Amino acid sequence: MLKQELQQKQSLSPKQILEATLLQLNNSNLEKYILEEFEKNPILEPTEMINDDETDIKEDSNDEDWDDIYESIAVYEPKKDNNFQISSEKNLLESIIDQINDLDLKDWEKSIAEEIIYNLDNNGYLSIDLFLIADRFGKTEKEIEHILYQVQHLNPPALASKDLQQCLLIQLDDDIESPEYKVISNHFDDFINKRYNRICKSENVSLKELSITIEILSKLNPKPGLGLQLYKDETITPDLILNKRSDQWEVSVNDSWIPPINISKTYKNMMNDLDGQNKKTKKFLKNNFNKAEWVIGAIDQRRKTLFEVMNQIIIHQPEFFDGNTEKLSPMRLKDISDIIGLDISTVSRATRGKYVETPYGIFELKSFFTDDYTLFDGEKVSVQEVKMALKKIIDKEDKNNPLNDDDLKEALKQYGYTIARRTVAKYRDQLKIPNIRLRKKI
Image (cartoon, rainbow, N blue to C red; front, side, top):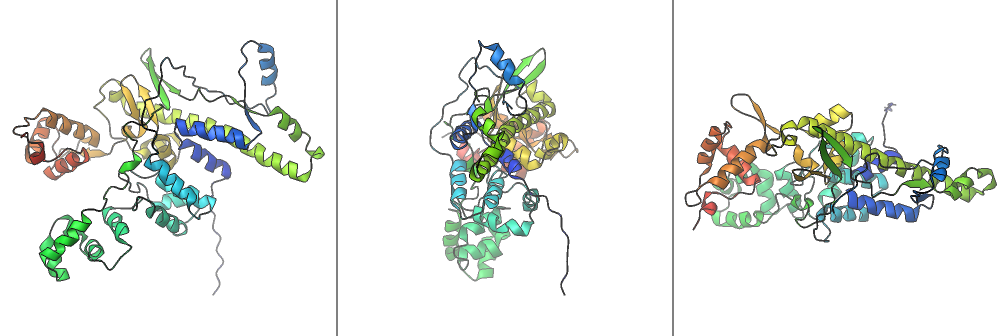
């Protein structure tokens, strides 16, 4: 029986997709994009700054319809070089974007693939539900599952996995009959908890045979996204600058290097005389004028979003910005997105790979976000705060007689953090601090 059903979907317009694309670019990539647009779109042109001819400037400002000159609201005049040198080697994020561009996908599918990449956590796992990404593009989750599959099979494999089990299975799915695949698929919990005797009994294999399987599994990558972080010597140009004046933080978007972008007067005159143009020229003018206006608007929107997000970070992290840089309050992307009325994925784009220069140093915006941990007495503190306390204890320990995880648990209790021993081990691992045996001075 045929059934007619009416559905309403909201798809992103080309203008919105462009805004999302520019928002996720850092300063160096934004500069590259703008230069490419100047070459591709002759209707866009940089405006020459003329300081000694005020008359011309006043005349231009009266033509509001077309001279939508893009000028920086928050101009930052650097007194020093704000570039911090790193290697010119292409990082993993750029490599993945190149791989996506090489896939046989439609433009909207590539946009979704990039959206997935920009919603990964530091370990490379998908940090939001897939249906949220689908909804943003006016699609169902089922309609974009094939795109997720493509992303998960880029190099490195298993990016955008939902959990560790899926991460390992993706790296093994070229041979689903292998003993390694069977162990992860059927005995994952036993494998993680090293209950090898159970696996041997269930699969009817010896410990010696299983040890070969375990050796192969140990070579898989449980954190495929670690390379998404910047190389230690990569050039960082801060996207935002913070200065404190009269006990108030001033937020400046560090994009004064962008030349004022203007609409070409030559093509503007042609646009005003469309009746005198042939069909091909009319199409060229309309398409490129639309794109030019979108570019100008998207750059402006990027600045406004970064400005709003940074202001909210300052409000949510008062102790940090009062100088206690080890003190972060629990704060999630959703906390910011709810206040400024933007999608979580938009806030994620605005914080990943974006840096702010403060009097205390340079920080990635994403580093200000931290989950909370509920202590046994019900008090909520940031996970980052507990980790910093743990690191401080280990830094001060006697390396001839280092503390085990139970000792660390008790030491943290003295700081006011009552947490379980397994949580201590988890945080120590996330801080990349070795166990007691490897910390002991020989």
